[in-house]
Length: 490
Image (cartoon, rainbow, N blue to C red):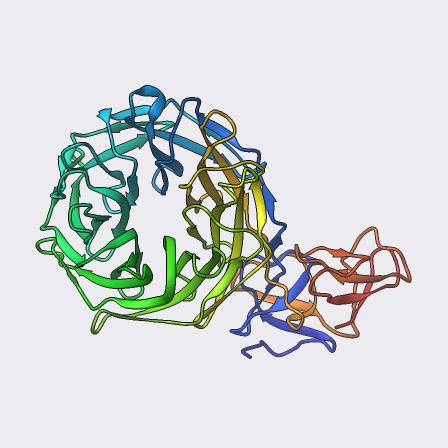
């Protein structure tokens, strides 16, 4: 480890990673730097209504990182099934969200599904949806708590198209739409370029990702390989497959590799996201052949031949059957994948839940599920990660409250503390990131404490404080010898 040599016996000098306050529990990082223990307790905010009318099950969400807003698109069944969008602002202090006035983007009945993504090159929100004739794309500009739209454009899909999904390819600055063509059953995709000067969008040629009978296509962008990944249910056996696509920057056309199976059993209600820490794609689904358990698989993309490989599936829900879409969202603050879903929709005892997973290599492990809504939340819920507030937001239909559209803010639990990485307590005053920090290590008295009880043992808590009871993991911080002094032990 790249430590600066100790200056005093029992004290360690090392470079600080992040600001290092005085008198705090310190951990050593994999690169030899030191930092305070960071963490947060898992928390669920109070659900907030964004649409009083019937929202059916067509709800999708994205995060506008330019305006730091959540944008939700949906079909407003309470208003002639018009295409509608609303802008939400997350308050991280209390895990709440507030909404502006809903705006109609299509004053006609739209299909059950919409897709939505944020183009970080043009700083525009892009929505894909269908009417009775074709698939359309439309560009929106968020300002404050409102959103305004350009003119909808035919994206080249056929009539009565459905099951939309959208993502943004930041490598070539193109939005990508994927859907199922009900006339053929094929998974098809198209890429578009946004012109922010007039909120317009132009499209390349529609490409067939996979022929045959397919369902539940869901796309995401892998920024490590610079490839689009579409996961879907395929064939008479309704098994799970995914395929890799490369978007041409010059003409917006998409070329695909060979699709590869990730689940030999029936894989329904598929979702996907990209984990930028592990540089892996995570695909979630319902294993209909295994009591409708919720499962997820970690995928690795090889851009040299547009191939994809998988690790073993992990289970995030095994207690109750999942009866709707699974939606994974990557939380870059906690380095976890948060998957929202509904259980027991058809039994009268439905509930909305989420599971939190951590990718290690090509596998993923999950904590126990947490409930965010005690009633049924409809087949389709969708989420987004607010990187400004560092929270996950899920939007859904409350089936037991007149099908109102609601959203809930979630704080995923996390900690940087492990059973092995605690080394002592910081001393000598606050230190800036990158500067040399002093750490009182084993056998040293740290005199930077307050309100301790002499003779009591203290344990490092997962949020970085110290307390009288062990947390999980159990890490012994030291023994108090006075109200302000702790004899450090590890």
